[in-house]
Amino acid sequence: MSDWSLKNVLSGLHDDIQQRLETIRRTMAHPGTKGDATEGVWNELFNKYLPARYQADKAHVVDSEGTFSQQIDVVVYDRQYSPFIFHYEGQIVVPAESVYAVFEAKQSANLDHVKYAQEKVRSVRRLLRTSLPIPHAGGTYPAKPLIPIYGGLLAFESDWKPALGDSFLGALQLDEEDGKLDFGCIAGHGYFHADREGRGYAFHTGGKPATAFLFKLISQLQFSGTVPMIDVQAYARWLAD
Image 1 (cartoon, rainbow, N blue to C red):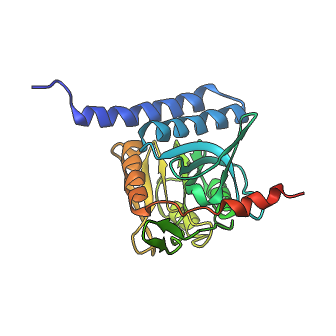
Image 2 (cartoon, rainbow, N blue to C red):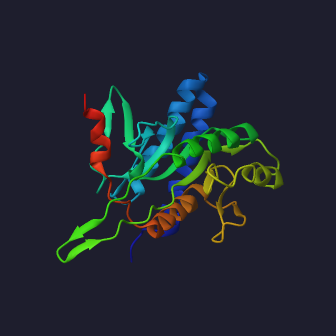
Image 3 (cartoon, rainbow, N blue to C red):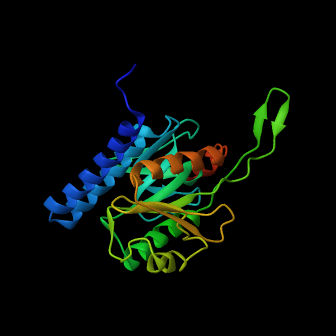
C-alpha cells in the first residue's frame, strides 16, 4: 500500500501558493517588487501545472494592425502552434491569435482592482485576430472560428467583507462585455467563475481555492479547443519599407 495521499498532495499545492502570497504581502514593502513577485507566483504555477501546449508570462499582446494591449500580468498563450513570440530585454510580446486567457494579479481584490482588471482584459479582447483556412491532404478546411479569450483576477485576499459577497459580485457586473472577468482566485478565501450560460457567477468559498481554481482553469481550457491558424503574412507586411 502506497504512503501517498492525493488529498494531501492537492492540499499542499494550495498551501504553498497561499503561503508564498502571504509572505510577499508581509515582507515586501515596495509596490513594484511586491507586484512582480505576486505575478511570478501565478505564472510559475501555470507553467508548472498546465499542459505543455500552454505557457504563461507577463506580456503585451499585439495584433496584425500593430495595436498593442496594455501590459498583462499573466497571459496564458499557445506554444504549440503559434509561430512567433517576441522576447527582448525581459519584455515579451505575443500575437493576439495565440492567447487563451489573461489575468490581472493583485495582492488584494477590491473595486479599483476589479475595474483595472476589466480594463486590462478589454485591451486584449479588442485586438484583431486573424484565422486562415486550414490545408489538409484532401483540400482545405474552413477558417477556424475564433476561440473566446478568458479574463480574470488573481489575488491573495479580498478587501470586502464577506470576501466573496454581494460587493464583489456588483463589481464583476460592472462590465459583462469586453471587460468581463470570467473567473479568478482569491487564494485566502475562494474562487469564482461565470456560469455556463453567462448569466451570473458562482462563488466557491473555503477548501483549497488555488488548487480548485487551477483545475477549473484546466477544464475551461479543454473546452476552448485550439487557437486559430494565424495569418503570418498579415504581420509580415510591417517589414515593408
